[in-house]
Image (tube, rainbow, N blue to C red; front, side, top):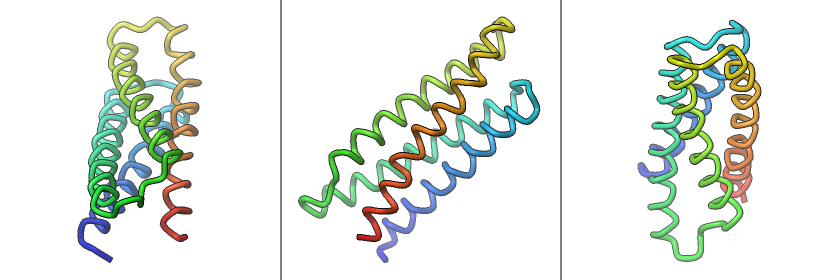
Length: 126
């Protein structure tokens, strides 16, 4: 296994850990806190870093990229960015209604994020 691939796997796995902890920690506590927002941003940073490393690997191996994985991965990162920005807004100025919607959106973003994560594992095993 190349060092680049190992680093990408570590970052993507850290993203899974951070994002899962943030989403389910927020759901368990029933309230969005600064800690959750920081964890969301850490998950986004790790996922973006891991994705950039994976993209570099794919570009070095002509034809190694999977279009479905690329599309779902990009969608997941965009949703994670929207989610993190919305978390900051909700924490600072959000109404109770906004907080309730945020709880549901958090789970939806996490579920969408799992698609490219699982797809990447399946592709990697193939």
